[in-house]
Each structure stands twice: as structure tokens, then as C-alpha cells.
Image (cartoon, rainbow, N blue to C red):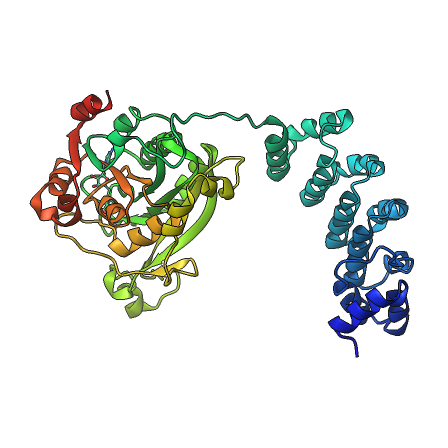
Length: 457
Ligand SMILES: C[S@@+](CC[C@H](N)C(=O)[O-])C[C@H]1O[C@@H](n2cnc3c(N)ncnc32)[C@H](O)[C@@H]1O
């Protein structure tokens, strides 16, 4: 019987053992199984049976044959792989073929890979680029690859940008893991855009916020939806500038409904998360995740009532029990590993997320009601976002501070916070004894715009 162990045994015992084995077990399934379980190949491995398999009727056999040829890294196979690229129709086999050509790391493959750069499958182009980058520094390779900076596909452009055009710009005035003292545990009263303009580039580690809803509450009146979106875009452009390289913005929004003015008119629904998304992408935020905040049905406004009575199609209006947490990262050529390496070992250990974390993107959390503010974050929601997307002693920002939940939770989790809030009522509430808990236990500065300006000097 064919087993993994048996395949490995045959492979190491005789140079042509696998060739013989395939003669014995020649159906597609068995051949794939054998090739799939070969692992590393011995130096004297006899691969002479592989070219015949490149025209096998089973895609899987062809795929594994190409992969195995790649492992051999024997230049005799270069023309054979070149030929495969000319006749093969299956996308996965074609991709694997380019990968195998690249894996040979042989200068003789350069011309072939140059030709593959014209392929219409961007993944194939990326594989060819990867193969060619082995020869980075070679005049022809550099010249040809650099031209791809205007390639139609964004993945191709981003690889070329990282390899050839990324500048080691360092806008920050301090090490990545640190933050300015005058921004730590501060609540500033004023318009967030005006305040952010006073901040240095790359000052904060994480932003978690819930913007004012479009004309849904008294603190959020905008002349038009377009004007509202443009306001948010301006806010998040500033947030982008003051965010440290490669760090996150977690944005809580949901579609909202503006009720009808009379029975003769219909209500209007605005898909805020979907409409703000293109602005964010355009200004240099990279989309990372969409997390759904799921609330109990009993906690939301009843919209289905009418339909329950009439049951008429088209009039279906489900109760809305979700909100989005859209997760974005400030675009960078650096990997997340780079961000993590900016912290010392003890901070990394101490910031580790404890057991009980969410394993999927649907978070069931009860909403929170507060008589002093109509739209507060549940502390549980803030806890998750802050502990999953920041390290101890990071500076967490909420441009739309409200009742200050982000600030209080940040402090609870040994992070610093910075909040801005335009409304007197909410600013005074945060300052007051009513907002007792954490703001009282830890020194917090409550400043107006002028006081803040003074504190920067
Ligand atoms: C949805 S609430 C945020 C509630 C907050 N997440 C909490 O847990 O309490 C939005 C807040 O943004 C504030 N706001 C609106 N426009 C602002 C602006 N231009 N600058 C600063 N704050 C603003 C509103 O007054 C409101 O308190």
C-alpha cells in the first residue's frame, strides 16, 4: 500500500526508486500522492520520468511534476519548463511553472522570465518578478523591472515600489514605540481637525473612533451627505499624517437611516462605511479587516414591525443588529514584524493578548446606554480593539471623544490616550465627577485649544 513513509523510504533507498514506483502505481491519484509526499530530494534523484508527466491529463499530476522539477534546480529542465509556458492552459500549473523557473536561480532563466512579464495573469507576473529579483543589481534586470512601476496591476506596482523606489523616509521625531509627553492622557476641547493640525507627523500609535452619524443626532448636522463624507475624509487624512508608520485605524460606523418627512416621502438610508472606504484607500490607508459588531435584536430599533403585518415583498426591512469595525493600516513597505520589533522584549511579553480573545470577525457585544451621551462605546469593544491593535504604553487616539470610553479603557490597559471633543456638554461631562472612574484615578489634563497650544511649547 502507498503510504507517506513508504514513498520517503523508496526515495532515499534508490536513486530511481520513485521512477519505478510510478511505473507500478500509474493512476493519476497515486502519482500525485507520490510526488506530493516526496519532500526534499536527494542529490542523485533520478527525475527522468518527470517530463513525460507534464502532459498528463490530470492537472494535479502536471502541477506536482512541475513543482518537483523546480526542486531539482537542474538547468537541463529550463527549456522544458519554457515550453510548458507555451502550451499549458491551466492557471495553477502555469503559476507553478514560473515559480519553478524562478526557483532555479539560474541566469539562463532571465530571458524566459523577461518574456513572462507580459503575461496577462498578474500572479504570474509577480512570480516572474520574484524570480528576477534574485538577480537584482544586474543592469538589464533592474532596467526592465523598474519599468513595471507603471504596471496596470497594483500588486506588481507595490513589489516594484518596495524593491526600487521606497525611500527610507523617517518623518518621526522619536523612536516608534514612544510618544510625546504633552499628548499623553490629554482631553482637548475643540474641533479635531484644528487640533490635529498642531500635531507632529507620526505622533500616535492607534486610532479607534466612532464618527458623528450623518445628521442622525443633534451634534452632527451637515449641509449634505457629500459635505459630511468630505469632513470625515479630512479628519482621516490628518489621522493618517499623525499616525506612526504601519499603525492602525479602527473605524466604527454603520449605515444610517434618515426618517421620511411625511407619509408621501420615503426614508433614506446612507451606507457610510462603504462610502467612506474609497476615500480612505485613496489617502493611503490599507484595508486590513472588516469586523462585525453584533448586537442583540432586542437592543435595536424595530423596523420589521410593518412587514410582520403585511408580508408584502419589496417592503421587507430587517432589523439592523450590526455595526462595522473597519480596520486599516497606514500603508508602508514595512512588514508588521518591523512594527513589532520596535518594542523591547519585556513590553512584547507584557502586551500579549490573554486567553479568551475573539477568533472570528463577528463580535457579539451588548450596546451600552449612557444618559449623558447618546452613542457611547461599550468598554468591552474598546478593550478588544485596544488590546489587539496596540502595545503597552502606546498612545491611543479618539478624535471624536464623546464620553471618553476609548480614553478610560486605554488607561485601564496601560496605554496612554489622547481625545478631542468639540461639544461643551461632553467635554464637561468627561471633566466632571460624574465621569468618575478612571479619569479621576489617573492624572488627566483637560485643555482648551489655547491651553493645548501653550502645552506644546
Ligand atoms: C459617536 S460620538 C462618539 C462617542 C464615543 N465613542 C463614546 O464612547 O462616548 C461622536 C462624538 O464626536 C463629537 N464631534 C463631532 N464633530 C467633532 C469635531 N469636529 N471635533 C471633535 N469632536 C467632534 C461629537 O460631539 C460626539 O460626542
